[in-house]
Length: 308
Ligand code: HEC
Image (tube, rainbow, N blue to C red):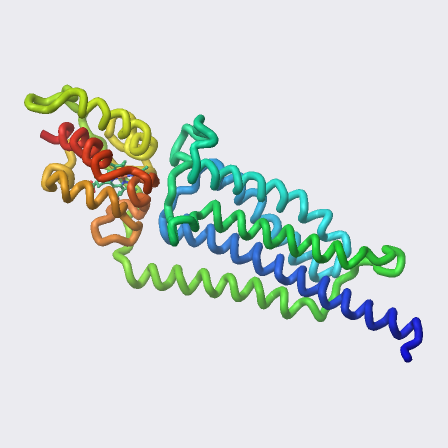
């Protein structure tokens, strides 16, 4: 039979192991989320929207806070982390609903990339806010597990630097950095090096409706253009610095048929595509995978009308 003291020692050890393990799960999630978001913006050239920035502001400090908390085996770490992860959870869930549903008709973001723009859509549901949502959820759950292990008496459990945590914590950081560097290196050697974002200014475009075009169809195309494309290519189609180039007086548009342009817009343009001139990526369908070929066709006819 175990003595009470031995029982206590064993349960202490289990508590310690579960609690410690969950802190490492949170650490790994925070570092993966941080490096992943840097990968999307810095390597893939996806421009972060306003809501993306809010989530970054909540996630990036956690990479440091959790690392320090693990090193000091601070039993109060969940109280520091949960406010960040729970708010992050709310923001990323809102962001995901904005992308995938019509619950929030009014757009939260009006400047730059629309928050509803979809850069990736793996398996039809995994978007960047979805990944953030998962990361915040993993961190929240890990903190709840750590909390459920019971907070030992702070008197005999004062946080202090633990040397045994140094190697695994540094390991997580180095692993994430190495993974990021490998992707960056891969991009640098594979794709043509993108030049700094210099979108050529274009002259003002002429009248919208050229002879022979149906004005009503053009009107619908113009409405969709303003809704989907204008945030990057400008209300007047003349481009916005660092977001999208000019579609007016554009040899690219002029040289292509309607079908070719619809296919190009449908596919978007990765930052490392051979014909990308700015190193900034365009999301597939301008970030709106729900647009039909007819709708893209209507938009493309408007753009072609700017390039007689
Ligand atoms: C999130 C920003 C963004 C949105 C939204 C967007 N684009 Fe783009 N678009 C870009 C970027 C960036 C490029 C590539 C610039 C480069 O190659 O350097 C581009 C390139 C293009 C090109 C090729 C132009 C050329 O000269 O090579 C066309 C055509 C185009 N977009 C049409 C559209 C249409 C139509 C929509 C709306 C359905 C749209 N874009 C929405 C950012 C965007």
